[in-house]
Length: 357
Length: 279
Ligand SMILES: Cc1cc2nc3c(=O)[nH]c(=O)nc-3n(C[C@H](O)[C@H](O)[C@H](O)COP(=O)(O)OP(=O)(O)OC[C@H]3O[C@@H](n4cnc5c(N)ncnc54)[C@H](O)[C@@H]3O)c2cc1C
Ligand code: SF4
Ligand code: SF4
Ligand code: FES
Image 1 (cartoon, each protein chain N blue to C red):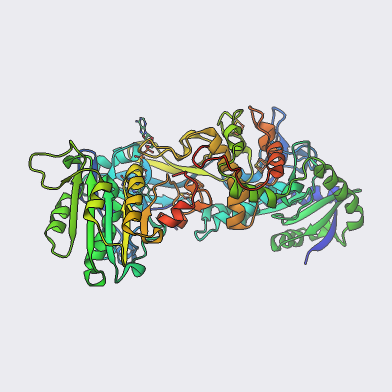
Image 2 (cartoon, rainbow over the protein chains, first blue to last red; image 1 turned 180 degrees about the vertical axis):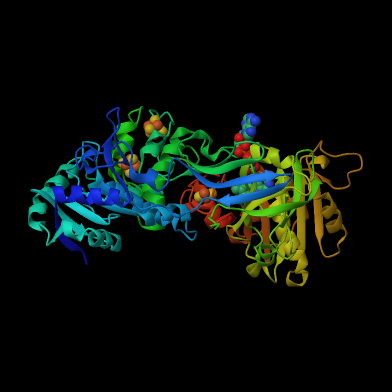
């Protein structure tokens, strides 16, 4: 059962101080020198922006870093010694996560635990407590409410804070959340301010709902039957295949595995972010490429997020955070595409031919 | 304290290097850790991520059979970075191996039936694993027919084993090379694999077919098998979509709803016909 509490702004500041003093890493949306708002380590809650613009990058990099050592090796005369990367991590508390970013992490958990438990991902998950702050409704690219989430979703968060007069209504959602409250018990007061929080939550939902009202079930039905639909022929005319959309996406988790020798004798094996939008992603050794056109690659991205992942893991692999829209140099607009797909009838029209993307 | 993780490979020693063709070699590998060697088991059709430290990892089927204990073999064609590094390996060198991954050929379902193996070029590697497995349990199966083709005599792999199979009275072996690929001494067929399948005319009744080779060969072989009466769910093949993790995480091997590394790499023709043409 969710416990409801209240924490004042100054108490939250003190809580952050206590964390930092205890050696816990504190992370939240903070400005870079160039003005970008990103999730980064902070030494004080004053650096962290609780609300306002969506951060340009997501929380993903704290669980799946852009580049990460899997193992190091040393070799001499045919003999090799391998040291796997450790998967125990120092405690970290995120304060001010966007609910959509917390939800994304919970969605990716499923694939990272699919039969094979990814120790590196879950090592970081285990060490991290996520305190989200309900969002005020984002900007014109946000569409979380169209993918089953909301600006105040609890999914993936350990504690959800909703701004109210003088502080935050706090919902304690998980054991990790309880542990945080227990460790800083003096900062919280019993009984939330649910009533006061409601007006904020309703207003935020209404704001996002106005951006897009598509039905994910309808979109999935279209994608599952519409592989040959003519819409895919022209879908990627504005796409450069740069992959920026995937890198800023909180749920895209494709990676590559490469060796980086430091010398003949030693080096590291790493996993690096990769993307299905890159032409070489599926290139076979023979030179054959199953997805040889950008149209196919965009279709794959849509299908993976809105049909394949939902069928396999019961989750839409998109939180409607809008980042791919904000970042795309070609002006590809997922919100627009979803709106379009949502209006198409499921199934390919009769004249479409299989194998003609 | 060493903590393993999913991506840390077992270490393997190269025990033997066999030159199959100009660009293809077979490596015989054994686990360096005797405990791992004792525990390791797999099923025909499964694959692994093989690595050369400093060059990286790549995906190969396990080309030897699970019935032959103590070692595994992989046969590879040099096409890129890792396979080029693998060509530099000598007996005594160390490689990495993660696996076994993926599903396997349904040998239980095939028991008591006739088997028809059809392969082209290096496509014989995954098929050879099933052939060896079936020959090691020969009593469990009825007729065994092997139809194998390559572009030229020089492109045939596993020549020593082809000679062995040719001598066995309980195996019908058809070897063929593309027209122009024959030598003066060549005693096998001359022609493309699908035509030789037609000529060999294997019985479809109570039989399973295992087909592997270049996409074009598979494309023209399937209609021949259909004509011979093989149902789609009695024809098995293995797909080779590019992979990295091999364990359903990296997102590389998707074909529509299917993750080839987890749901495959072995599929029957009925399953393949349901997939979008992205392989
Ligand atoms: C389940 C499965 C089983 C497989 N089994 C086998 C098997 O038994 N035997 C086998 O041989 N293969 C097999 N393969 C294919 C094998 O995985 C690839 O051939 C292998 O990964 C290639 O690795 P690489 O690092 O050498 O190539 P990479 O270096 O990754 O090359 C990849 C691509 O880059 C291109 N490229 C590489 N170097 C250059 C260059 N210098 N200039 C221009 N282009 C270049 C290549 O043409 C190729 O298209 C299998 C694949 C799968 C998925
Ligand atoms: S959709 Fe935009 S951001 Fe994504 S790969 Fe294409 S050009 Fe790059
Ligand atoms: S696909 Fe776009 S909107 Fe959806 S989660 Fe990824 S970046 Fe956000
Ligand atoms: S190879 Fe990584 S998901 Fe299949």
